Image 1: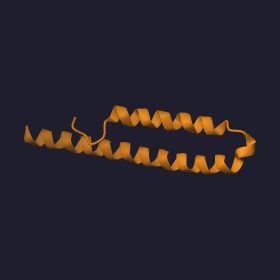
Image 2: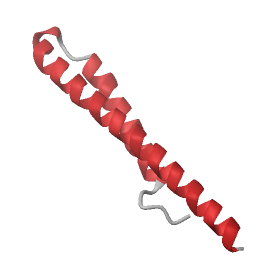
Image 3: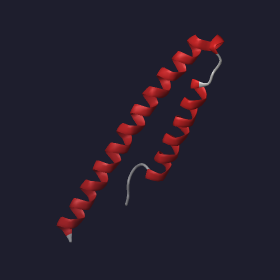
Image 4: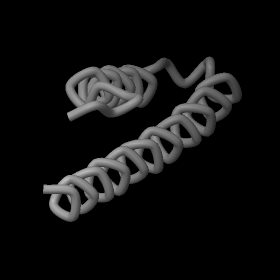
Length: 71
């Protein structure tokens, strides 16, 4: 499938972001303010990646539908 984003790469990035989120959860209490800021940014990234994953899926579905019409 010719998608603008490689689904396997997207999955890898999502896994790495999840790993970062877990690491941040384990940060020391002395860095609470920074921890909250990092968690917020990681959550924004998670949402953006999920939206990207959904857009890729919709694009792939449209290509499949188009190919079905052409063939």
